[in-house]
Image (cartoon, rainbow, N blue to C red; front, side, top):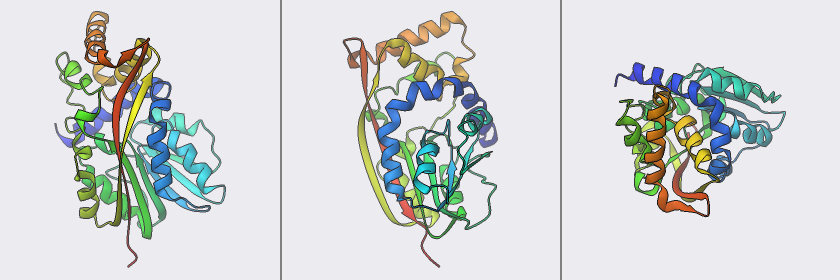
Length: 270
């Protein structure tokens, strides 16, 4: 898919997912988000650029970490996600709609650059990482979290299940950044040094079949494709997906394995 078209698909896809995202994923992603914040080593008064801020779950953590003396510029490709973050009314946060591959910010103007679970969706993750590097002051630090290897993410069958019904190609390389060493290489090629990588396994809990379907089908990366389903197709896709994760169901709760990779790296002083 052409990069510009893929970005457009991502934009409208996350607009569609916005009403369901936070309720579906807030608890499941919390441990990975905390790891990212810890590895970012925030300090009071710092300026932070966040890409793919989504509904502001990590934005709130960053806001607390840098305090009122600091500033957070929270950006996302989806205007509806930006609106949700803006509605948090965080005093030290400014929001803007912009893609990770073309940040409309000055060079070397931030102490930290953060991207929580956004690089998988970029048609060019290397370019997005290079933009984080450009935005950082010498000595600044970038931190990014992505989903890990496909084989370690028990919900991964949702992509072929949806594509068999609507050819979306919404994120054809979704798990590429989670392959062993892949994200580290991208950061090295962008010019970063002092790189730390953390691979984290997590069981994602969903309290019912409907909660799981709302999160994965309506509040995730396939949301735009799913919007094109009629009721019968949506029901069929949902049943097929539930069958794909049936082994993780116990006493009405789905406990699905997931994996995250977090990289923290420094733009060295010149």
